[in-house]
Length: 400
Image 1 (cartoon, helix red, strand yellow):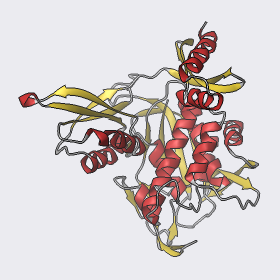
Image 2 (cartoon, helix red, strand yellow; image 1 turned 180 degrees about the horizontal axis):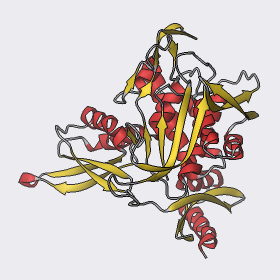
Image 3 (spheres, one colour; image 1 turned 90 degrees about the vertical axis):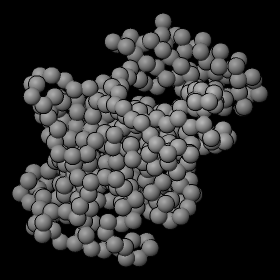
Image 4 (cartoon, helix red, strand yellow; image 1 turned 90 degrees about the horizontal axis):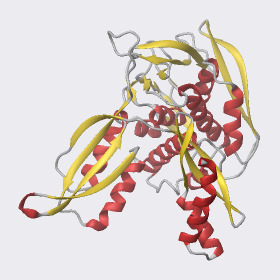
């Protein structure tokens, strides 16, 4: 299954939630994911509405007033501890990380320390986690590409905690670097059409940007925003279906990613861990080093980065900024991934998460999460290798 997100009238978290429900995702799927993360009650309420004459689904995120202050560091801990499908956790973490990085850049603070206007709020947690769970439900076990249209951002000014800000607001501008965007529908009154949470979700979900790809549409969802201007339908549309190669009806198309590489022979090796961390924070699916020998017998490394095409420019920026390379080579690859889920075993009365992978419905690997193993070892004083061996033995029961 593949998705096309039509953001030509803008996007927000609640609009995307409504579109996913309209496309057939049970609201219980979204609510269950939100309940797993939110430390306080959050309710999703769905209703049918009309926008410029079009029927649409409006999803209200209802939260009680809360004075609790949360940073990206706090939200990351909530996501790590939540009982979520691993694909949903990874996508939600990626979306929040992008939003945190953008806010940090705008306010000139570390992403972990910045005081967010929306990220720490319960409604934003519901938006991000709910949308990620809904997309995972629509894409299914094997997943597929997500393509997003050019994004309407709006115009004029909007009131914010820092006073009147230009539209698009600074965080949206930062999030949509390298992404096709424009002011919005012709004749639309000045207004904010794309929120920071909406922009972060679009960037975090997109494998590519552009018009609807060749696909056999199976489901359509129309999610409504709160306003109903006379100039256009204030909605986000989600089309779900089977991707097809143009000119080849019935032929499938595998999602592709890029491998971006560079040979580097003059970088202080102490810098490499920071480079790899920065690449992952920029959206890379993976980043690694391979030792090589270059001309004149010089030892060196090949830096390789696996990334979705939509995020390749961010990766290029990191490589050029943080390494000494003066050029890159790139090639497309097809990625095949096993179905993944997270289970848990107990060691010394403490839960250790286990990554479980299946092939054709059969469990083929069950690998304990190292961070949990290390935490148990630190708490109990036992050697980490003993804790790991016990967790692996317990995990074998998931395979057998």
